[in-house]
Image 1 (tube, rainbow, N blue to C red):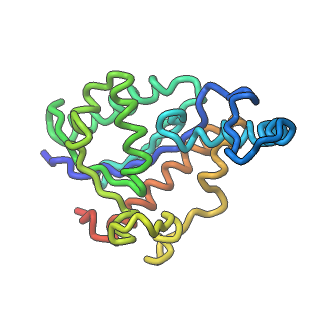
Image 2: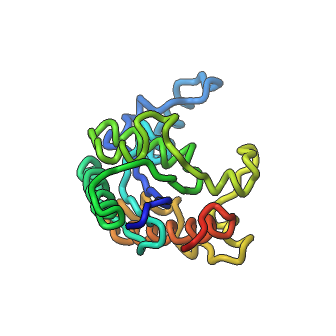
Image 3: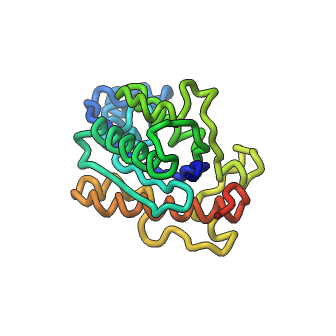
Length: 224
């Protein structure tokens, strides 16, 4: 039986359920005039709601895509109403993969690979694994943040200097790998609002393939 070494994954996220009231929109501190404040809040209420997708506290996971070692890439998603169910579906899919590889349902920590994993995707995943009591997934991730084994392709590209960020698209192009194409993360919210859930799911799957190829080019993953 083979031991699982790496899981490359990607999330696509959407805003939270609570769309702020205009009165809740935060305003720059130098705004003093009530009319100016009201105008700013009116113009920015939708933007501040959309920006929730960037927050692992306020946003929601829409799509999870992943690749276990050299297994085919998989992707699951929901319509925005069942993040908890999405997390448990992912957990069970990973448990089945462990059983296939390891010959039992014994779970252990693996190395998780992602672009910007430390500042975005892993906080989203680990906090929701705790929130929704995904106990089996926690065994694969790590009981505490200190236990999580992860490799961030973004950090490898900039030699651990987070002051110089490089997008997945640009990093791939540096190594002659295919870039993002005509759809990117900034378009996810609009696609979700149009009900294009499968399109988002397939986009996440493609991102995993790109991250995997970049991880191989960087020497993070050695293909079997």
